[in-house]
Amino acid sequence: MKKNYKKAESSFRECLSLQADYFAAHYELAQLYYDLKNFSGAVLELQQTLTYAPGNHAILRKIEEVKWEALGASHAR
Image (cartoon, rainbow, N blue to C red):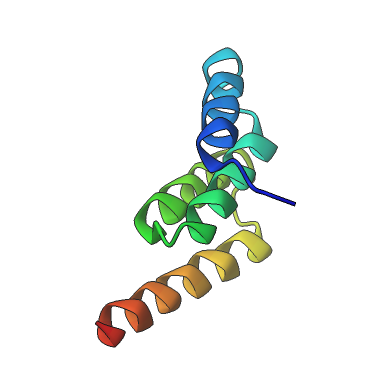
């Protein structure tokens, strides 16, 4: 299946403009950014999810994973 990242990002952003606390939209946007290797964007969106689910250990782990991935990507250059 062909992925249309720009359309997906636009859709998630539209959802968030209508409901800023939509946890799933923030999480999926983070995943989209991760897939695009936009690690800083992914971390920012994951941090937003913590606003609505403070202390969520799965999200905290995911943030650390993304940070490690970003570190590895920066060293691979």
